[in-house]
Image 1 (tube, rainbow, N blue to C red):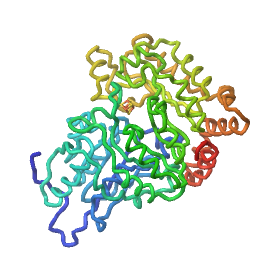
Image 2 (image 1 turned 45 degrees about the horizontal axis):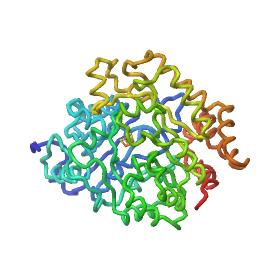
Image 3 (image 1 turned 90 degrees about the vertical axis):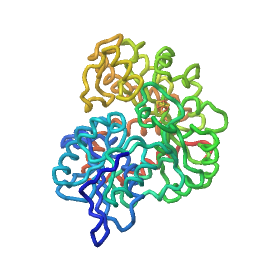
Image 4 (image 1 turned 135 degrees about the horizontal axis):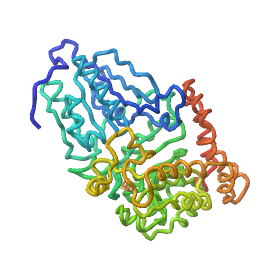
Amino acid sequence: MNPITHVGYDSRRKDGIMKVKMILPALTEAKSPFFRPIKYSLFPPLGLATLAAYLPQGDEIIIQDEHVEMLNLDDAPDLVVIQVYITSARRAYEIADHYRGRGVFVALGGLHVTSLPAEAAQHADVIFLGPGEDTWPQFLDDFRNGRSAPCYQSTHRTLLNLPPIRRDLIKRHLYLVPNSIVVSRGCPHKCDFCYKEAFFQGGKGFYTQTVDDALTEIERLPGKHLYFLDDHLFGNVPFASALFDGMKGMGRLWQAAGTVQSVLRPGLLEKAVACGLRSLFVGFETLNPENLRAQQKRQNLNRDYSAAIRRLHDLGVMVNGSFVFGMDDDDETVFTRTVEWAINQGIETATFHILTPYPGTALYARIAEQGRLLHQEWDLYDTRHTVFKPAQMTAEALERGYWQAYQDFYRWGSIWRGARNKPDWYGRIRHATYAGGWKKFEPLWDIVIRTKKVGHSRPFLENVLSGFGKLG
Ligand code: SF4
């Protein structure tokens, strides 16, 4: 790191109070005056609240999330911190340029900054590469002393001694799931298409909090419902096992993400259900082993997907299946085959994606080398647009098939067919309510978001979830 002298925070100021503004910019669709999908009002900006915890209580900190509120850009804080994702990069740079034009010191960090540091550096006074547990406090020291570096690269990865997340800065009422929590970073696997790969280069790619710290954080959260946003909550078996033991009796209902492999592992899933797991996001990605091999998703190879779903359903856990279209072995039959399979398995909700080569991933390097990238308009790298030439269909066919898959999976006929897998009427109605609740009532969600009543819908979510679970 090469220290530079910067203008910005004046450490000679008598009050010693620093004004810090933290911003999560939104992609255009999320602030549309016409329609706002509920997915943008689910989770608060936990990463920014985590960084805020390193600042002294006396500092004036504001967190603004453009997905749920209008940004006030008419101020001049000492420091602006912006979290940048690929789809919101253009907007993030716009905001950064605006503040720099006002003489405000701007820091950029996040996945996109780590993937493309040279691009981000053009819009920032300082950039952060990788997670910030080591570099952020170091930067704050440097900044207060009037000497910070232009770039901080994370190397020492640990979640030991994290200060308590500044959840008081989160506007809870604007989110359906304000109780989101992350107790680990990264994932033990390395799939070629995974966006997190570039972020963790240069250090550990998977690490957890201590079980005690994770339990303490859980206890700080009011209400019943939790959503673990960890990439792979089950990735460290001893940790997950001890965490679930510790959560038993807390009366929580929770959702998380896990792999097929972890679902099939004897014992761990039962512990998770006993302490409140009610819905799991599972990355099936593709039903084709050739595709799995090509993407290095080896942990899914030779796993019985149907057995994993049966196991989850037998324990009363809803399944949100994740599927990716457009891998090299996919032709135009992939959409119908995948949707039919998911319906027949009784999966409650499905998330479909168009394969997207994110910069910094092995997939991106391969596709770029093969000359198959169509463009670098990052706004469109949103897994809903085709940004590369697929091997066995046209780019248009891939997009058409993707939208058709959503329509086919979420039509009422399909929802009822999927619900028929449940052994009794109670289970079938709950399945239909949950699946229909997400997609069929999107216009209703839009009204709820606009009237800032998202938080009022939380008891409904908890009620549906509490009906599931066989061991709780
Ligand atoms: S299992 Fe999921 S989180 Fe882990 S590397 Fe693969 S895609 Fe990424």
